[in-house]
Picture 1 (cartoon, chains in turn blue, purple):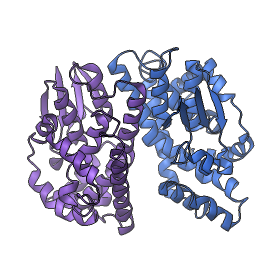
Picture 2 (picture 1 turned 90 degrees about the horizontal axis):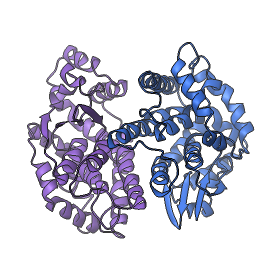
Picture 3 (picture 1 turned 180 degrees about the horizontal axis):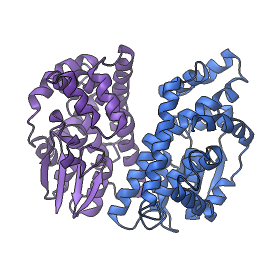
Picture 4 (picture 1 turned 180 degrees about the vertical axis):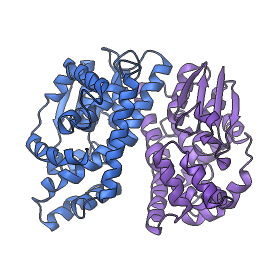
Amino acid sequence: MLDLYHAEPAANSLKVLIAIKEKGVAFTSHFVNLHKFEQHEPAFLEVNPNGQVPALVHDGKVITESTVINEYLDEAFSGPPLRPADAYGRARMRIWTKFVDEYFCPALSFIAWHHMIRNITDKLTPEEFEQKVARIPLKEQQDKWRTSAKQGYTKEQLDNWGRQVRTSIARMESQLAVTPWLAGDAFSLADVACFAMAAGVPRMSPNLVNEKDTPRFMDWHARMSARPGVQAALAMPNPVRDTLEASRSQMSSALR
Amino acid sequence: MLDLYHAEPAANSLKVLIAIKEKGVAFTSHFVNLHKFEQHEPAFLEVNPNGQVPALVHDGKVITESTVINEYLDEAFSGPPLRPADAYGRARMRIWTKFVDEYFCPALSFIAWHHMIRNITDKLTPEEFEQKVARIPLKEQQDKWRTSAKQGYTKEQLDNWGRQVRTSIARMESQLAVTPWLAGDAFSLADVACFAMAAGVPRMSPNLVNEKDTPRFMDWHARMSARPGVQAALAMPNPVRDTLEASRSQMSSALR
């Protein structure tokens, strides 16, 4: 029995969807609509009291945090290995997955929230909004909703996150000059983590990543996009695609 | 050949020192004096271009990031296992080590910096300070030095980090009501990561952790402190102890 609670195939949900599809493990998909705040509904809080997707339930055992879930999937199930066979390779992989969690993902996420959140919150009265936010379990998440929905972030903050995204892309480009995949000679969860964040960047910000400035990134992006597991993950139901598309053009200006 | 570059036995350096001592692996210790900015000297930047300790060098291969180093030590060397034997146990362990890296450690670290940094920077002229900061490789670290040395952090920021420390202790107390160690029935890198941060809290903040309010934390802290590996790590040379002690009493008020 394997149940995955996830949102649309983007960011941390995409990260786990790619791993589970690459691994070829059968699972039951539970779509949690973040645009309807379903991650804070009592039904989902029974799965993850922190109110965050993705969450994996394996034979009644709950595993949270996309990076932890992905190593678990590789350890608990047979199928193609998603991690290097040697300890040093796994260390290199973990430096990447940690970098994504602590640097690349937050930078992109804050920029995305800044441009996207009003598409969600403009449909609510101030009372409805406050009601939704009040039941968010983590104070940090409450703060993020309130700040980004009300005053938005400052130009200085957005510029700083834009710089962090550029630094992340530059770091990938440098590594891909040395090895074909981010953690070495083989595809691994390092590539999964980075691609889950960077999947939309070529379309959103052709000024930032392109054949001239980041040829190795583009080649890696094409190789990732051609993988059946990646394609299957990206093809998962995406009922909020229109809202995301509307935000994408606004985001692209932040990533110049 | 195993070389460990580390600072005094506190925080992330302590985290790796405990793991390597618990594992019983022989290594060459290289003390990097952060109070003299040695982590930004060219000699150390050749080891870790990011200018951060700890860093491990095993047969010429460099591994950075204390959390990654600790899993590497457990995978690459024989000796007592530092991780649960099953995939689910390891997932639970990683949720803790990730929580420490992203929540508990930053909160404590910002409070510590706020109270400690002037002990270091007051000895420098503004020109010397700017010279030291200008060669820090990571912009985020430059910002941290400049902000904490110049204006310090706001009361709101310090209160928020204090709340995060209390939340972290509460989370540990809750888990220890269910299992004897943080990731389950056995001592693991989850305990190492949390203890590396929490080691000084009972002495620094008896109002926050004590027999009455956090009995399970205190019991766990005593069991950790009694371990030979932990004692060996804490007994590593600590030439900056006096400066740390001077800051400790100032920090304690922030953790009430």
